[in-house]
Amino acid sequence: MNYLAHAYLSFHDPDVTAGQLIADFVKGKKVDDYPAPLRKGILLHRALDAYTDQHPASKTARDIFRPSSGLYGGVFLDVVYDHFLANDPARFTRPALERFAQEVYAAVDERLPLLPAAFRQMFAFMQSQNWLYHYHERDAILRSFGGIVRRSKYFQQPATVPYSVFTARYTDFRDCYNAFIRDAENFMKTLTKELS
Image (cartoon, rainbow, N blue to C red; front, side):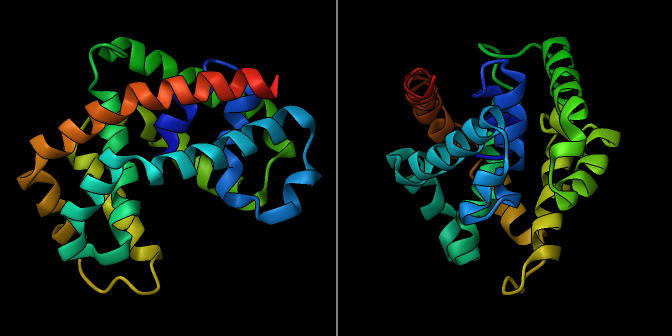
């Protein structure tokens, strides 16, 4: 899952939200350097990533990407899931998505001094460009894919290659998202209660 889904599956808990968003910037036992509420978010993020990777719908979606993207299919899929979440009428109207994005930015802003420097640098772009809201736009997905490609050491193709797969198989990816999202919600609700 990408930033929007991790924030959404924090269930409006500001500390968990911030922890989930910084998790990719906190390696291994560095999690112990953070206060317990943020640590909970980091651990939930890691659990959600593992759950997502193992879900049959995610495997199907990664297989769609595999011929063009190899092992990077899972990275592109994270962004694709955010796109469908942003466009999911059962979870967001467009105004609700905007309100949610601002709620997430506020939660992070309040905890910014505690967060990793590399995350703070990235977050400045996320907030100023309102990534969470713009995930509903297909053009934003192409830009996100471009960012993945720029940061990649081994992916040698332009972002238009996985993006063309995304657009050509749009309905198939949406079906994978629909098969996944409720299971992910139930998993995270259960795990959040267990960690409380």
